[in-house]
Figure 1 (cartoon, one colour):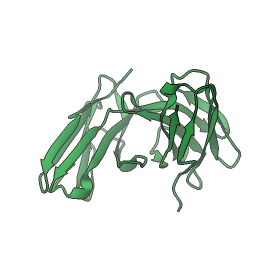
Figure 2: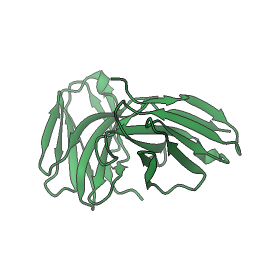
Figure 3: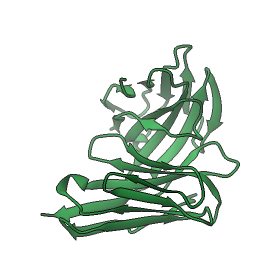
Length: 111
Length: 113
């Protein structure tokens, strides 16, 4: 069953706005990854987090590994049209050796 | 460095047939994982291969199988296709295992009619 709850499921924003999305779970994670997927393509890795409390940036993207190790968030600042896509969180549960994925957040931007 | 490649990109099959999909990982990556992506179920883990051995397996029926070759290239096979097998099949590679950063290929879009 689904072990990651990602929210929101979709977002409709104006160009230039900031975006925030998050993933939560009842399980403890060793790793959090954030991916972006565009139509007809595979997910592209945006940010990888390996330590509780870790805050990492990649350009206008910032992600954090929650202190409890059960959540993570992704922020996008000053959104632009090319940010459109589906963003997935993925994590590796403590003791497991496979990724589990959130259901994705579909981001739509009005110019 | 070239990314993960998957062939074919698109495939149309009929129920009952079988299909083989191919994945070439990033050079130097030894782990290959396969995922099924559908609108209703999202990304579901199929299996992971490392050094030609299946290391992890998801909750899919035995109709789904795979293998890995000595050059780390991997194939996935689905036998006795069902309509519900229509999906985007994604392959991801990582250096030493699925517990690290995985890099995805563009996927193979399989349609079963």
